[in-house]
Length: 292
Ligand code: IPD
Ligand code: CA
Ligand code: CA
Image 1 (tube, rainbow, N blue to C red):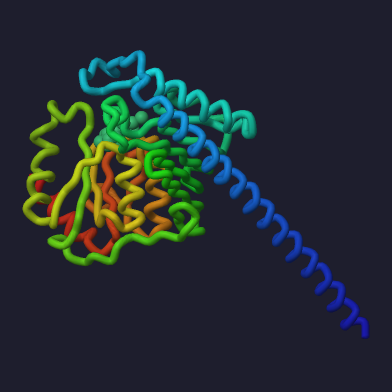
Image 2 (image 1 turned 90 degrees about the vertical axis):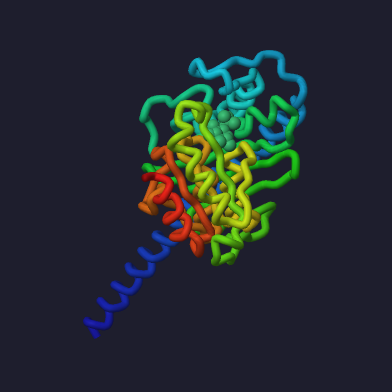
């Protein structure tokens, strides 16, 4: 009888512990989901602000002494809008924004923001640009939202919960041959100084793939691989704000992300190769050839 009493007590304690853990996990999920929701709402609001301001740019500056590296007052205002909105809910979090830089390392959470990915397109009225907001927790990207205000397309993902385009689950393509693949790439603003290093890859892929495009918005390039419009994307010199949200979206859509040699990478590493996974090794082989 006594043994049975203890068994019942232990069972009760076990059940209480299980419930506690379940509630805790639910709470963490709800918190992180609330952060994704905020990223989504903010990206949409910022994207609409960008669209409203097409053709209204008053000041164009050149960054880092590079004639082709533009920044407008709209990039800066959009970033300020995004940070203000997120700070009003999560005042203690860290931020890394393209235009305002990073702040201290005070929080486990860091919002990584590109307020306008595709500035060159934007200044010409070419409707290929977007807003990108990624959220890092202890060094790992856990949520991301990319909004394209011209197509009204919202790409979003949460770690281990799949990737969505306007709320519908999305997957990478199933193309398995490079010769049948549509690829995309981009070039950094200092391409002229590094043409010998960058152009061989472009030439080689032109010869090996079905076709190669260059859209001018790395975040959209990533999302387009994620939803299967492109089969692969490489670029040699990107920044964390170009990649943070898009890389998570790509991986959650079943895509593969490495450096140009096929090794694991991080958004703090400048180079990036992403694909549907099936053509990844073929892309690595072509890239290696261009490195000699
Ligand atoms: C640029 C775009 C472009 C890529 C450049 C990025 P920005 O970002 O993503 O596609 O090729 O490397 O710097 O300057 O328009 O935010
Ligand atoms: Ca960018
Ligand atoms: Ca930008």
